[in-house]
Length: 331
Ligand SMILES: Cc1cc2nc3c(=O)[nH]c(=O)nc-3n(C[C@H](O)[C@H](O)[C@H](O)COP(=O)(O)OP(=O)(O)OC[C@H]3O[C@@H](n4cnc5c(N)ncnc54)[C@H](O)[C@@H]3O)c2cc1C
Image (cartoon, rainbow, N blue to C red; front, side, top):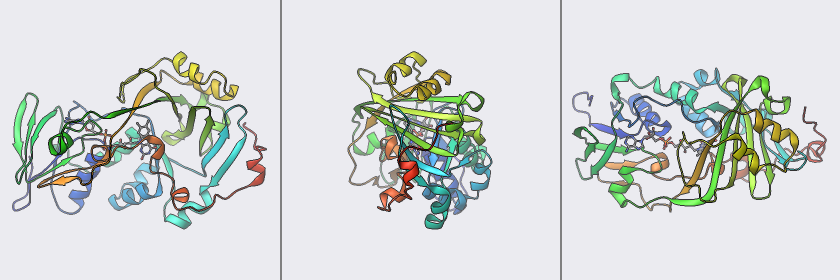
């Protein structure tokens, strides 16, 4: 574990978005930390994410927003809700005009790997220790981390950023399994050249129907369209960025929907499938020198994801009746 003299030893468990961002922010404040990640390499896994203005502000503070913008897509339209049978627009929000004026930043969509890469670049490689699966934490004034097949380490501060199945959370507050929500997410990426024009626009579009919804937006400088769809999970309980389904399974959930959407699903590669988990909120996240961050502290369903600030603050959408009446063609 690296440490400058006189500074606390800080260990971060988990090298996801939360753990790496914590290491980057600590470094910005003059603190070294060591990230212990179970995977043997930092992941290309995952698909699209919406980077809302509050997240963009943090990336600007870190000095990497411009780097992300090179691979991200700046949205002109957000929360464009469409009816499942025929694509009629129910409401839409003009982000191009309103977002920066209200929040000082734009809204972006990005591939998770692109976001991870720009944050990882801020953390010296020697401060990221791969292949370290934390199996136990002995909390206390000087917490001790134990790893599978690796030497234990002691630290002054431990930050558990190890996701929804957090070992650190279990050590602090008792190891209880996450609750299955009964919902799952299908995720797929469609090459832009195989996606119709309506899905290539810099827009976050949500198709709403009975028991299901599907969201799409462009990522990777517009080279790909990200699809994420929510459906009843049945017996499916696998929660992983890397678990897959078949295109047929994905299509079966949306069989009766607008044919243009069905074609978009068909154009995607092998979809990921992810059972959505939930946990009851904790009253506090820290004990002694150990604390939690990100999904380890407070996992949320993706459809709360950085929930739109215009909605959260009760502002009425910029509401164009032509759009609302569904006269916007899906090219
Ligand atoms: C389908 C879906 C769509 C989403 N869309 C959005 C969105 O649009 N916008 C948004 O803001 N959020 C979105 N989210 C949520 C977002 O992905 C998570 O909130 C975020 O990834 C959590 O980051 P994290 O670093 O806390 O945890 P994770 O990303 O889960 O990272 C945890 C890391 O810890 C490692 N780890 C786990 N256990 C151990 C261990 N025992 N020892 C060592 N390492 C360990 C893992 O390998 C991983 O690298 C979405 C989530 C899902 C499932």
